[in-house]
Length: 311
Length: 99
Image (cartoon, rainbow over all chains, first blue to last red; front, side):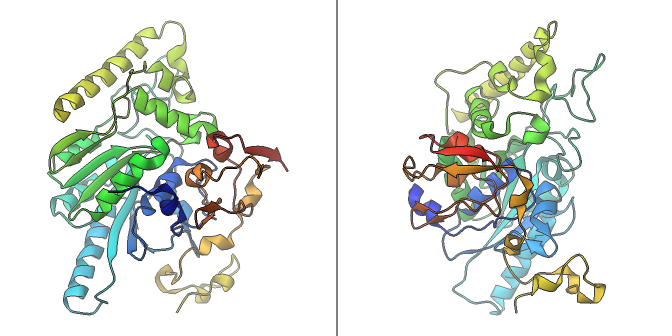
């Protein structure tokens, strides 16, 4: 697939300004750039799990979406978009829709609505192989309700339900590897990406996901300045460090075959990714070196296991 | 027919609300001025800008519009002043300024 940056940037904006997401939010950067991968003239139906994005982009009567949009409940974003896609196919079959119009079905969900609460409906929807894309913008906690831990929260992160103190050093468990769980559903396309390489990787994967027939899953790391507590303008540096330290590897899985999208020339130590974030501040206190070691060990283990799959 | 949202203000009566809270229009959030949230705004030094469009792509608020391969004026009515554009600009052509 070709990538003409200026042409892509000149496409009409599909997420209007005036939504109420925080200044510097990673979620809307992800949504805008995924929607930009839609070909001109094609329409979209956007589904949405409950989360920051839902409460901020559709505040009655203000909608930020230029395309059709539906929100139902927290746990059923996958089921809702399956129903929409099923209804669309039925209407098309009966000749009640225009023949020459193309509709694409895209659902956005945060990590809470995807990894935890909406997981059963997502699992069901991809198993039935509806023709849709599920985009998870993973910011690693329930940011909308005040930074509670989710199963996407990395180990040792400080959240309001795993607060750091004299007894606790943050979330004790490792994060769930959802992309691989979705791959195990044998779906035609699954990929993991974030904001690097001027969004080329994200754009190409979004285009593939949208135009692949059948269910596709896209997991996008979208930093949250409030929850991660980094300096807001530094979002691109954070994403770059996540990839260079192999905390968030870029890969795609097409018909069960793993492809690594990017391998860092020199893998950076995980400290580089953790240090700018306030939620990991306690790891750099004296006496906590063993926690950093643990963290690094887990990153290495997952990276090695991914490399094996990509061969 | 597109929904007229001008009457759907905070003082709207329940009889004025649309059935099922549906809005038959796209992008109505443009009517809402999020630009007043911030005390800093980006100032583009036009002479340094090379139209690389990286700022437009990274803006979380779609506040840097692009028209036919060129960045047009920053939409200060909606910019929340996060400063990402100033950081990603490779030519240091954007400065954050206090209002």
